[in-house]
Length: 361
Image (cartoon, rainbow, N blue to C red; front, side, top):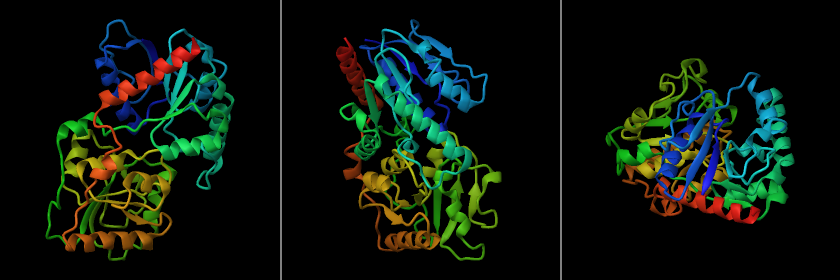
């Protein structure tokens, strides 16, 4: 089976980490020959080298502002990606090209306009949804990460019913190989918490909820680590909030080995990789009372209203109370539906590619 991979819009840290785990799994599968990989011009994947000597890697250079370049790439210039071999698009938006096309969807913003979107962001996602809708007919299959996302994307775009496949992803390879498994607190005698929120600075990640916390309030938190640059600190006057910038995988492992819990604030997710990472490691989770979080975490997480700092404080205090009673979460039930390794994910994607190729013949 010959295939091409389209990665030109995969520049974010989370999506890049996914591909850095998945691409080697494709390499290990002897039933697949990767003809060509279209790489982004920036980000962690721009220098990716496929080990198969017959594969051709091509960087897709952008000479216009990204939004204009993406519009042209997905519409008038998409014929560049015509071909007889299937094209797997990791970048949410279908391309207007002629070939069996499989699109991997990770962006919840494609569903509908959100109240949190304003100004240019609102316009940008309106354009993306318009392109998505107009290019649906060029796609043989869509892959999403949860059943909830499948139902929501079909509700938003009824024409794709019957073409949407659900395939969850495990944690990144670097976390699997670390062997970190938590069964209790690092410092059990503490009466305050050490938390981490690994997320980039996007509006839907909801860092601004922290700005509602009064600087003189006495929360039972010793340290909250945000993976933001200092200039994005939403509460510079809170002494227990620390911005550490983007963290390499080894430092994330170190923090997962010592913090008391994962704090997750995001209002919108198609999946929520940090939640899966925390469950894999065995960490407690404090997260928003929203469908995506309930779908992944079930009854084991501690939930709060994502618009209320008072609700967040109650959740933090509840976690301390549970610690005092000797509680620690068991995520075995939630992890049953998540693959154990990336070889399985690669095999399932290949099966979808094969099915789409047969239908196109």
